[in-house]
Image 1 (spheres, rainbow, N blue to C red):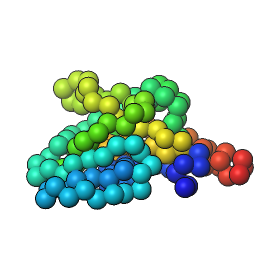
Image 2 (cartoon, helix red, strand yellow; image 1 turned 90 degrees about the vertical axis):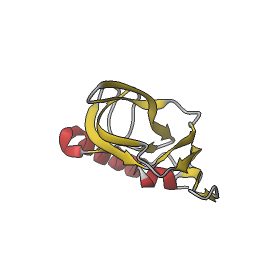
Image 3 (cartoon, rainbow, N blue to C red; image 1 turned 45 degrees about the vertical axis):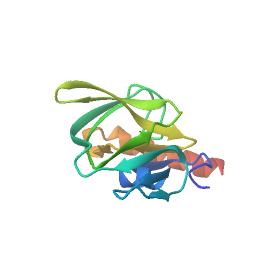
Length: 140
């Protein structure tokens, strides 16, 4: 209920998976999760993604307005089995150029992504996140 209350939350990689509808394990069993993000993942035996990323926000998020950029890394064995029917909040690029995969999903105040953003790449990310939390607390 916290994530759907409009208060800011950040869920990266395993946290993102925890807030999905669920995931399918290597034996094909589905495990229901929190259901905040309307999507599911499937575990694999090899990396589904690995590398450094630059995310440029296409939408306002708790971490910043459109145009905000941050760098991070992505490494995971799971992949989206169903893509959320919500707008992607980021455009991504890697060392070889743009990555044409939806990324950074916003539901209410919760931002979910496979990318681990490094706040030192843009200190405004942390400042914006704290400001979002303080604003939500003041409005509560």
